[in-house]
Length: 475
Image 1 (cartoon, rainbow, N blue to C red):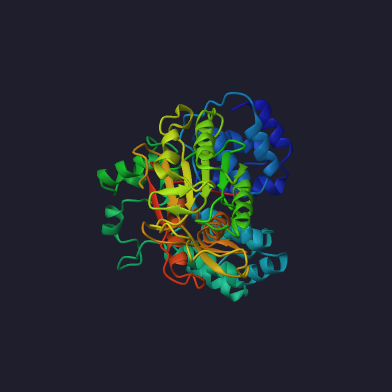
Image 2 (image 1 turned 120 degrees about the vertical axis):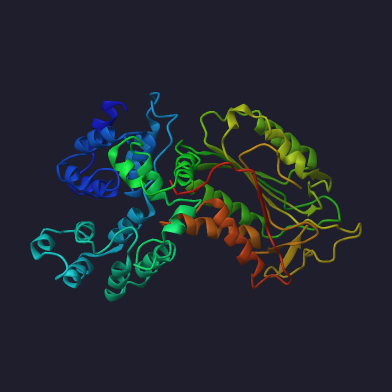
């Protein structure tokens, strides 16, 4: 990496922030070497020795410590980065969880924490611990907590009266592998695992040939090791600023009598544009388009140069019928016509392309749909809006409902599907768990299907040809 850029970053980091970065790097750099680090320059040297000095890993560090200015400085650097083709490393969930707890503990709670662990950790070490991260590091040295054992940490969060943090620890604890008869991880379960944890993958990326790695993998079967190596590059890279466009096509007013006004659609526009702007996307809203104008807009979009962007998001909100959405002129645009223009866009190759379709997918009779609200309908009511993904990779299609079913919309708060989708994506972005979008969409399915305002069942339908995990975080 460019030494001048690293020097500028070093000048902007104080001793406390360097200590936080060192803690986050505890799984990359051994404890003795971390103790020798006095400034950010020293940390960069150690990261370079371990093969972790790249823009993706630094961006993860600065994003976690909320140094958005340094993140922007890193992303705005115009020089060609030598690590562009390298697989980005990600901080283990365990380390992110500890950092989240550190952020949310006040000074008096840290003192309470030190008091509660007194007796398990030498007093002189506790006296030198000024932050929760210092206490956690001492607890790790003493074997009180570890990646596979956070029972004591959970107990401590309960004892200091912080229920939200206790819940964070519990969620992490619940995802740990089952213990064997002697309290360790069940060997058979470990050998049969098909999705090794992120901290294992991060560890493997340091140096496959190093003695530390060799000793770590000595007890694992060869097939499991191959699975680990193949999953090192399992995440889509989201480092560009901006990440890309979030195009929203929203039809509210229709020209004929067959389809009534989609009250609440503006709220959907607002929720989607606000959320994806936080994710680093640039909102681009198009209102009340005819069928021809929809296809024209998407064709023009597909001719754009996406080489300096990481992803594309397209949201279409309208009435719909089986396999199609409706333009304001009440003519159909097939779902295939929406996806087709993006099948062979070279500058989007290997990048995630997300489509969210809020529309009914049922056969609508030729007469006026009596289930739709009239102009005089009370504004606090819920009504309904009336495929297949491309064979190409890296596409996700989020349908508001399955075929032959309605998609419901609140006339003030917007579509139920869009409401839940935005809320769950926001929750995932705030969580330390790094849930990918498919995990989020599973939650969306459950919550929409059980939504209290829907008069009959609505089941969303995600379809995808994604080839990696996509994690959306706030910029």
